[in-house]
Image 1 (tube, rainbow, N blue to C red):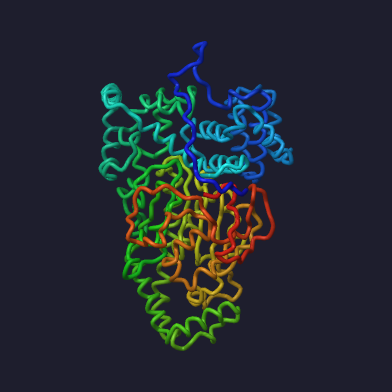
Image 2 (tube, one colour):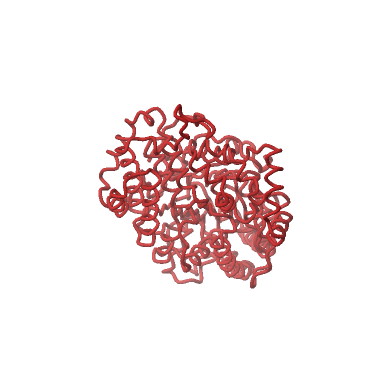
Length: 580
């Protein structure tokens, strides 16, 4: 659904838990202040939205449990639960707009509909587990109320900021009291992870959750008194720790792990210095000489989250591959020859005998490193799957973005996750760019149980280099990086990048334009600043203008038409309801 093109505004301050009504009653979460009829409409709208977003059988238990918890949260009668379960099962979907209009007429919501999003966010976080499906629902609801998603960012950031408002003397008292109850084994674990991350954890994480009871008052401005009370309990300590992973170290602590199988290098490097309720992992597809010799270089403009990492993997082999790719290019006589190859590939008549002799002469230079990296990327992807399944990142939604062999890592990560139970609710969005993987829809079918939000396949029809490395494969092979994936699902978006990407090596060089084309935020003014702007805490984001139209543009999370699209970067369309 389109979001209104207006600047992000700071939300009004909510009464802290210390304040109470004239009768001395504690301040209640917004949802419970609504009339009973409007609480019913609120819950019904969530149920209908869940049925539209997650209709697959694998998600039915989540939808049912979510609605049961929401009915209890809103203090609705248990008698309405069968009705809400029916909504979540797909009945009554035509009533969504009616419920939205009812809620917008409520005295509490008519001036600021984001209050209901604040309440839904509070409910989604109350157990310390921010399920990716819950976040997709929150984003979808935000769009239903025609509010820009930047305001959801503000809510999430304010929630985190409230957890960091700790008075020094209170923190010392809590730590002293807590130390008496902590056993040495747990302290050793916190110490080891803390050393590995060099203080990289959050305030909650570094203290191992010791300060959690003291931040309850600050958190009440977002969660409300009931949620704040939970934070002050022993359960609340575990809740907040679980959001950020073991001792808050998250992914940066994983470098302590041992070598796994044939994988020689697997490390998460921070791209930003912030913390966020959802994280992004970027995966580079090769390394090259010059400014693209590091894993982080292609992602310098990425601004999808305030907590972003890049995966450093098998640098030696990726550098060999990058050198081989450059050798292939130097094997062509001139740029004209490369352009001729591009249009030959576009015509779809490329066969083994049509490749230039000058290119075939250096083919052996690329074939071996390419084959090695194909194998290792699959192994790295499988290993990444088990890291995410173990919740090393905490219980927060994860977005994966990768190009070339980095996209292949993501592909095998999703394939591996799909084979495990409890794989749902971890991955929010995935973006595969120029992916050297099978593009048949049947191979992508299983991703629907793993990915909660968008599955973006960015491809270039004229990528002759990708076509060349697959020259010995069957002509029937569909390569995702060369064409759309024809899977009929609301998640799948095929974005034709042919007008943005001239060749396979452009995926690293044109990443800023590519990210905009697929609807991912980039840092404002990056085109002018280039790599000179060091990655760190992100500047305030500007409203995003999509550079290319996703082919399966869903305006409200409902299934739409065909999956193929080929619009260039000058054809902006509104982002999806859950677009970040």
